Image (tube, rainbow, N blue to C red):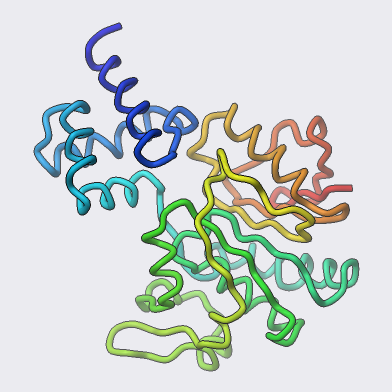
Length: 261
């Protein structure tokens, strides 16, 4: 094994000890590009030196975690998919399970997605009935999500009536209403090692697993299946698909969502 590969294997082991994140579960070429860009930015010559920096420099450590956890999000990302969620998926789940749905927004990043879920569900339910369990492995983005302040670009796709009702402009940014924030509970969670919530009626995890290896994806999809209540739905991104959904036990209802029978 050449020294570069050896360095990266050592780096992965140290990162797992430091953060609990298993880089072996992510596509290596994509992940190494992200890490190498940080090495270049910070003028660090190799992975070994970078480990030393991560152990001693809190700012560089937080920068690293933020970079590798792939935090790209916005409200109502891919609006046609949200229209399907709002017009078809949510009403069907309410008919099946009633008004108190157990909803999990996994890998929720800065909160755009779980807050979008609250807004979409508010078309059908009073806010007092809406509770979203939102998780991410990056505590920095969870802190941003709890703050609930977003640039205009992030909320551009929010339907105008909901934007007027639930957002307040503060300078160049927009703050989401307290009553929407109150519907979401945020906490840290690692999809690859932590215990999953059970009995979920809806799990939303979009544009995250595309960065995982096939083996890691398969593990997560199986865990999602076990996490769902019978009749529950997993909603994924347009760039993702579950190739072995039948083997896991899912029924494919659409390219975007799968149901546990």
